[in-house]
Image 1 (cartoon, rainbow, N blue to C red):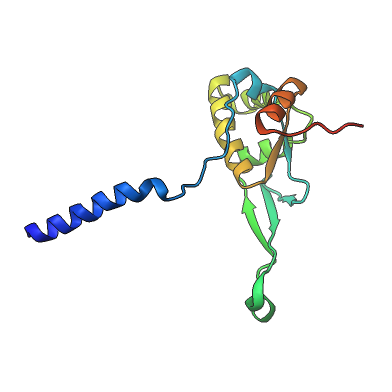
Image 2 (image 1 turned 135 degrees about the horizontal axis):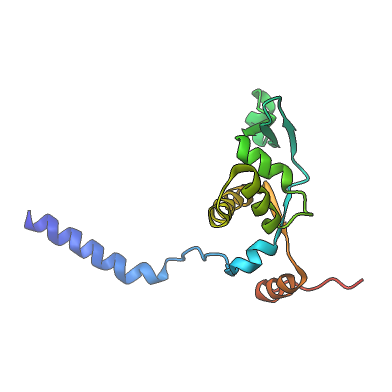
Length: 160
């Protein structure tokens, strides 16, 4: 038993010594935004996606899937993936037109579903994070935020 333990501990020790040489994935830069900045964002749906609303008021988002490789040429493949949103998610999805701010959507949620502003903000933050990670939704930034983010991420301004 002791020999096994010594071998394991020496392997662990060796891994610790060499771990600094192993490349780790760098996390992308994240610039936290304040609550006020979040409320000024204008969410916008991905224009490459198609979506439809059924008779119950639920939205179904259709995401095209590109087939790759040799097997895709031989085997039948699915051309799209579908995501069905619930009633509240569908309501919010329709409001993400690039014209309304998050604050506007919070106010509409308060009126329609009788939510407290803080609850609506937290729920929208989580929901928008999920949709943006899946690239279903983006945001139009106010000018002052756009300048700050451009500096942070090294994006050069386009000149007209």
